[in-house]
Length: 601
View 1 (tube, rainbow, N blue to C red):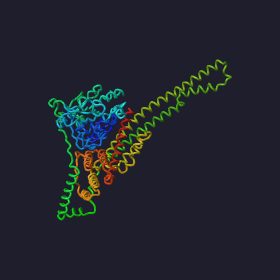
View 2 (view 1 turned 60 degrees about the vertical axis):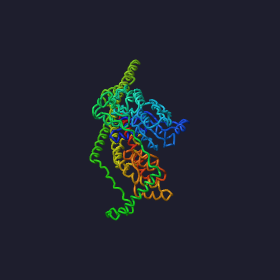
View 3 (view 1 turned 135 degrees about the vertical axis):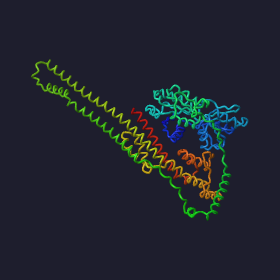
């Protein structure tokens, strides 16, 4: 499915990654730009006096992290995505309502006591309604503003014009309203007839009624996961009109029955610095002692490995193999099609030039030129009167006008033919770029060199500055390729172990001993639910992000580690950032190809 994403850029990128992992092709077209606002002078004192913070969006979590350094205040998030964002920013006590504003209000009434203090609601300037759990005092602070775009983004315009979309996602009533307004302003309402709209709620779907979508689907629950599941179901059955997925189960087919609401997710606190130290030290000593005591009973190969000068490197994962025969055949077919189109354009240009030069060869025009030559060479003595001279001059002027008109007609015919051939060539070139972008994306995922695929762009970059810039940016990485997500994830545990050891190896004897033990055995917590700002917590969340295919999130977490971890992580970071740079360039290439395809229609 080719899916349009209308969310702000940061959320759009995360959603696009999830769509790609499910086999879909995202088209990012943000309808809003996020602006973080300075908090009012009363914010700090109100936050200190509050018992908890309420977040109704991931942007609210980011704005809160900019407004305060405090990370221990309890946070109640509307959904899992908002909760994960808050955890990634270091908030240590985060609870998710896994639903909408009503679910968040219900969770607050269940977990909190109104008598223990007020609540802080961090939101944007524009909200659908105030969040006010019954019996609680809530103070709302607008810490960010989502500013509407003045016109439909170029990526959305090109995709709609090219009829290159299967679905479009809408996560709020405001996004739906802005999209409908901008689409009608651009005169592209009819282009929505082949598109299925997927809305996060019935309220978000309401403004879309003014557009002639093929159908409007509503997610079973107001979560990003439910939106992704709804998109996955589209190829199986798309029914005209709204198909709410949250009605009574007995009224729906079994395959569309809504899932039961998930229980609130409570993120548990860690053990703390002292607990982690003691637990790690005791466990390390026990494991090390057990290993040394059982050493005589180990097989010879294991003893050799233990006593060797260096730890054996993990076995390299077999590199994915591509079907080279199919690849070569596709390249030959693509080159042949481009050569054929190029020959046709050249033949048309030659025909136009010959038509321009051949006006003198046409029989009628040659006859006219002959008459002009006879009249112009006629001796003045043969002209009896001035009246005859004037008549002859008039005839000469008419003949010259006839010749000019014939020449202009030949040029116009040749120009019209050339324009049609040029459009055909432009469409073929755009399709070729889309195919090459897909091959490059596969090469990035597999970690293989992509110089051959990149070389196919060389004949297409003529008179295209944007394409030339993208090709030049990928060229330094093409010969050796970049590490794929799988190889980056496989190498990360060793990097995490060294980084954790460097973090603990300070000047104290106990910490140095623990650092050395950490270098021998890997004792650390793992998983996306490890909260806190410690090196161990960030490494755990980074590893979980890598296992989920989110390289960008893992890189951000590793970059936030203390300086003493840089030696252990610098080489891995360079490989990961090379992958991200190449992926961004390939994404730009795909977006540029869609724009070219739309312009050629």
